[in-house]
Length: 522
Image (cartoon, helix red, strand yellow):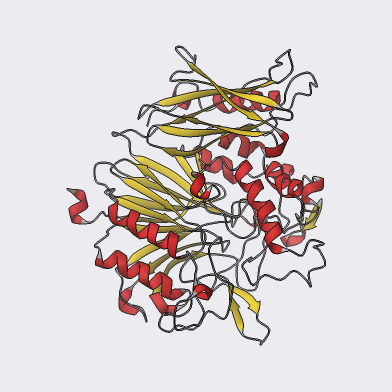
């Protein structure tokens, strides 16, 4: 794949970006600042979003070309950035040719008569062409459990490890921020070490106000590894619970949590959702449901990505053992489930990747209910029996995939803070009306390491690989090295899909190559 680094050496390009980053932080009250850099998002056929933020009312300006000299460039007068959206703005670049390097400059012009201009921030990305192999990375769980940006450690350096593999895009699988986790100036780590953090007022407590939720995203963008990554790798965001508060559902009750003065969970959800949509480089849905997160992104004949929202439409977290489906057992919800089935059925891509914010067969608890019964946060319910509760909805989906002969479906997720590869085997399942499939789990990107979780045998998950803290050790810092991301490569000739699970240094800890089904290789 032709990349800008091949023209401007690998050593020179990071230096160039570093100079750009330093320009973003240059203090000058006379011109707009761009301290959060730029992001690219929701890459699709012929289009990619460009996101940025300034510090005052201004207009976003975007220049792009297909060469680093910006010859024959096009300039777009983008949207206005106002206080109501925390001075964020995004512009959709459209009619982009396939298989091209796209070089982008973004700046802001203030709304005074002087039209003062910020220093431009520069980035680039590559559109996927018909002759390209496909490479992308995924991961989740950033700045959690009080493990924030430690400059002495090198910051959130897993983002640099991901950048080095030159992916065409990145899937953020949820828990982009930890709004419910204060970040202290320092905290004890394993082996007597001390972890030190950059701290801002907004991350020093749980997020309750809109500005505090916004501050979580601005905090992550203090990390230079992430800024460099954002300027090169288009991203596909989804969310999970920590963007709002741990394990939120209709059952969430904060009355006994002294950290919160705001006890109204719907109000916290509304503020968190607004901040998420302001800072995510995603393409807004239409007026039918402007805040919708689930969507499909297509990459030619080789790949469709189905991005799920397992948080917004679920029923309350319960004992999850109901024998019949109802509003209480909803997980994706009927509308999203119908959309997913229809899109999967109509997909003509060889590989169908379902990007889920939670795994299917891992037991993830949420304490106990008022009667002392175990309450469950995800799909599994710990009973190892036939499908019940939320499993009923997933059973319907898996059965549909089988009977509609939808081949080459792979599930990618994060959430549980360790790396794993699961093979779901109907021959070993209690509910077996489905075709076998793989699920790959990664994370965290910069948070505490946990696990491994126990499995629920309803759908017969076989743990082919897992890498997690040793028994008895939990919430290990990034010092321990148990931070993981995933890399996916699809070869356009053989159509094989290879998944590599990689650690914080970019070292492969597990690899699996999957062959496309026979009729999809034709």
